[in-house]
Image (tube, rainbow, N blue to C red; front, side, top):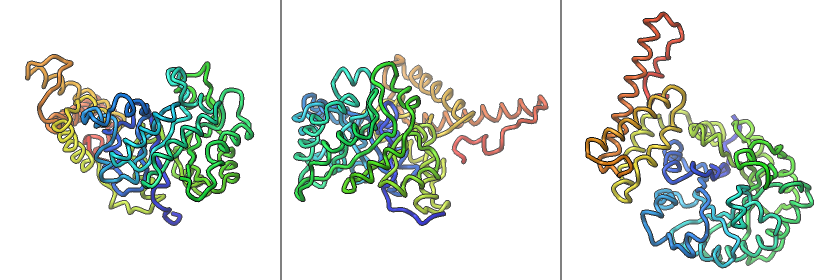
Length: 388
């Protein structure tokens, strides 16, 4: 193993319907060492400048990882979307008041709905507007210790030339040369964005990856911090990129398998294997957190349960998914509630009962395989939900 690298050089990418506060809490329980930056889902600046979400604790808790901001502010990045300099300024101001120390502007999302709002990847076609928005974000952050960044693609539609990207980056970071100006870092997704004809999911797979373009920009803009993103899903590839840029962002790999963070902890950051939390420890801590979030903010059990489906894979995941759904439905029936009502009982009891029943289901599957003479038995560790 190579020498351990400095903390916070790896990041969990912002992912819609994945990196909500409950999932980010789970990642912190899997990896409690402070090695990885955790990015929120994209939040429109209007949520703060107009809807005043910061004044609604329940709404705020469903969008921002409040535990992590309090305990790990250096490692939490809140991503906002805006094409309005004043709205972006106000959003940054309110987020700083909430304790946020890293704020990112989304200039990479290609979805049609985002385009209709004139923000996301389409903003790369108007670099001066991006520069104006970023300038207002930096003005709001000046003197607070808050860091500002921009996440973008290497190109848009037909234009993936180095000249196009260089013009964009020059407008955003090139003019910030004075010592009193807050530096802006760049997160570059190594694919272009197609604004027509491809869905957001297709935009994550079909456009060809061009890692060298990211490396090239890092060499050109030597005073700017660059983080690379896109299709990186092995420890070896993370280490390879860290030799060429300042940071590496991983998305779907962690969304599908959050335990990948523990591999990074061991093989990139030098954490010994015996220090890595076990699945049973993570589960126990998470359900206690779920109880707290439900009691304090009325968090829905369906939302709290969703990260658990990502915690396990294969037969474990299927068995737990079935039993969790059954447990929630049964609890509501017993309480005389409709299916869309909130159940006020203990989240931890609900989950642990589902885990017990799922383990019984796995044992029954094993018994059935053995009685039929099938040699493809489940390994003994597969009979326990929270066992590695």
